[in-house]
Length: 52
Image (cartoon, rainbow, N blue to C red; front, side):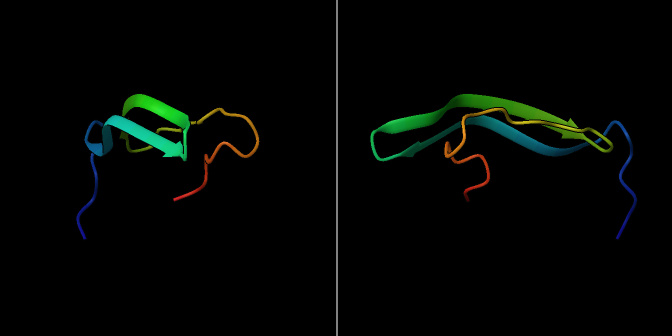
């Protein structure tokens, strides 16, 4: 496995949408992360932040 440079994108999400039935919990989220980035996804309890 090769090393990842600090400026190399390690995860890119474009126009993500997520819903549970009629409830939309993510509407058009886009993001790009790099090695060493720390991210947070805010949301109400039960809104599906850790649901796959």
